[in-house]
Length: 428
Image (cartoon, rainbow, N blue to C red; front, side, top):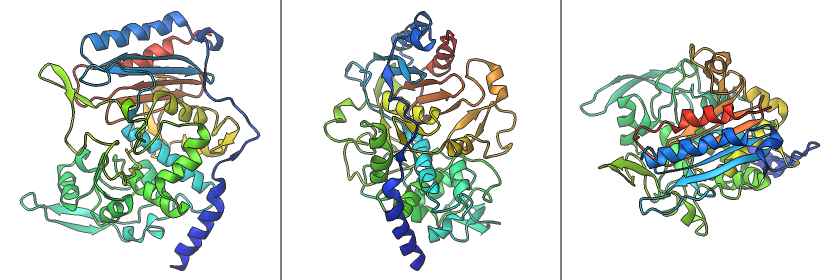
């Protein structure tokens, strides 16, 4: 109890200045002619043809694409429709960004880490005691979903949670059917809910469940960032949504990024659609509530997948990283912290692939650069469950964002094509 009180006192003292004024003052993202920042207007126009063809061929119902270089937006267009009623898609449309939330949560964690509140290799049980003495799944009975466990050989650390090496599962998208069943039976909420539940309630249930493997042994995509959303609440003394609004979104000018949208913005939310019976239809099911994030209790702030945003807002977030943690005179993270976050945090768990995993992003290695069309070494990227994608290339000072809202496909190949077309438009 005394430890918890000490943490809260520190949090109230320190988080008032989680973001600070900076001696650097890079400008906020603004629009500019492509030639002014070394991009070919003629080559960028190839994105128009690609996107329009994808819409006309029903590979996607609609898409918003954004390209920025050297702090200037040089391409920002919308194609197709926002819903099955045929509403025209606008470039300020709001999309459920799902797992693109993870980088935002990791940023919040690192902001608090910079204040000296904890070490990345601290056991999470030091702050959330329910995680003490984790257990690894040993045997499982499909007939009644009963199981046995054995003690893990070490505690889960904050770094394990950031890097998906904790051993936690991921409910309805887990690759192991046993964990889908275990999580469902325990009532674990993965994201996208309108039910009245808090992340504290969810995480304390999650802490009682078995792990896939001993912490630190492997990489497996997990609910680790959801745990860290609750951890941010503990360390900051604020609800997670309020911490992000006060210390990240407002300082960066990200006015359209929310867990649950204000009513004034709800009409801009793009519907999630699925290709069915030769047409795009509104999608619901498999852990997803179609009314999220505009209705319901609005109490569950998923650190792994809960945010909605616009292409421009997320580009602003990425620009802060390209600026080594600063934007418009506000210092969110130190340059030295960003450097660490972009380092290889999982060793050779992705051996033979084109990327490694840092503390918030996948990061392109030499093999990835040499394959072509993906960017320079150090390009960082990720995507979301509803078919959103982004990348940012520090060497070229280049950002590409592609926003869609679909589940299931109809031959959508816009992701790799967009990334290639952005890179081929560099003209300096």
